[in-house]
Image (cartoon, rainbow, N blue to C red):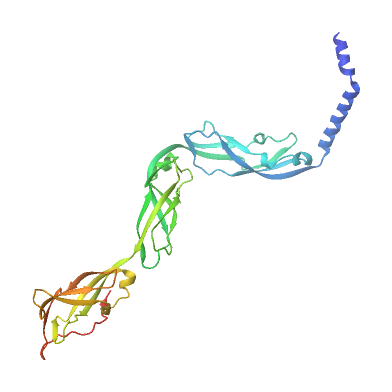
Length: 321
């Protein structure tokens, strides 16, 4: 009975079986005899199953270059967009680990050979993850308009929580922002900025942007005007001394262009009696300025005679910035 079964297995539909065998032989001869060629590909490298409590701190190649050899018909069927080199990092420990890139990772069709892989070994360094709350430091680029300055910078939030490699996080004291350009500005403004992490292993826990408010104001300064003549309100009178020193405070772009002639010097009696007599010196400067000091604050106003040295004269431009 067993011999009959084998005879039926061989002889039943023998024509169809012979045709199939002939087709398989012809296909094998076609593939073996087909002209072979090579193709170079750049395949992306993907890290999978990285433990949640670990972070890769070394540089990871973006792609693996391979060279394939095989029949043209098989190589034509290889879609490089569907090929990815994956490294399974499940169980990786802190420190340095090496991974060999084997041809079996590529899942290529049978008959296609890998003749070149670069890099053939991937060396990765891992570290434990850590978190820390650090200050945010805004960074500036450029300078405001002439006569203006950045008086204050306010960042919201002032601190952020950062996650990254433990050895990096432990040394981290602050996180800078991307550059805030204030070139030519003459007014305050608020702008959202990204955080500029100093190490690629770092990231923000939560949002990675902050809002920075820059307060830009006019620069202010002091300027001293010496020997500013006292103007007498009535003829026939003179002041002793006849000139005073005035210190003025205000926007730099304003006081830099002033001269003594731009100051108004007035006299007011010290007591209820009208002049002549002792008088307070009152100095009025241009809008936006403030008189810091006048020396002396009191002068003596007296009638002029031929021997009196006290005179009032025109304002001079002698100044000491």
